[in-house]
Length: 452
Image (tube, rainbow, N blue to C red):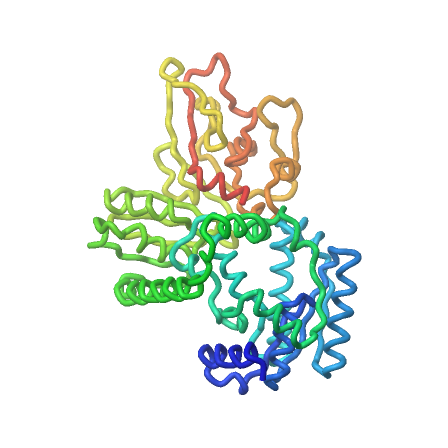
């Protein structure tokens, strides 16, 4: 038995105990890594099926890859599943990158197949070099300790059986076993961040500090161990402080407000609700100072009260409309409006960014209504004579399809005053004869979330 095959068996035994007892769905692209994985599983005699995705992106290469995988699976009598995806259309529809679209389509299909066909694990051929790339990508983008350990060998039902092996070791195995494979030419294009790291940054590091990667695997192991210890500590010390009530999470942070580790603790609590580390730092400050604050992620709100806070999802399927009875009463609003009323003489001037809106206070009739955008809504944008469909405005502002459900309208009677965070209207605009100017401000996090 080949050394790489033996090491794979030992690696899997360390993760799942008795690998021979399970059924595996292997994601095989036709590249050297996944073809090596398939051959290793064949040599080990594991029960397996082959899943191949054709993303219809590379006109010349993709059909040849599909044919290679089909031929190999047929020759070796393995169950084969092939799916063709219109990846470009999916990316446009979801307003995401081609890479992200391919990933979503691939894993959605893998999981569906795994469930329907009775496989225990989905296997992908990520290896140690992929780990290095993921580590640096996470480092560049900003991450916590968990992100620095990159991929885990097993994450739910996704298994990475070659995560211990280097790309060179896999290529040596491929050549020694005469395994057919094809090279994806897009892996050589530096327009993708992962490829830039591999093709440009790593060679530079090799030149500056030869052998920097020698102990990389052990570094990842230590980081993984540290992340596990940290998570175990948090689980033990915070479990009594965190209470779940339906879809709401309540956290009692009393006694930890002044800890220098408070932002790190808070980040571990709120990160799974799409909050970032700067928000954790601001949340720590609010809890320390016992101030009422609201924080928004792309999917949830955090409300603070004293040294406690609660996390709630945006209830888009629930209440669709809210009423703001006065500029001093916005407690029921799902958006943390900050109202300031100025006389014409005291007005400091307009803030030219999307977090602010200005209106002639005397032209408004309270209560104002805050409601979700609906198809067929119109606005007369500030500076324009005619009406404009809000759907067209959202397209012009490149609001992703999945964010459109998050759009709120502030209305005065039947008139749209503000597509919140995007555009104000001609209605109740500030003019030369305005006496009282109402300034509205929303959190920058809300405005930023509309474009994510």
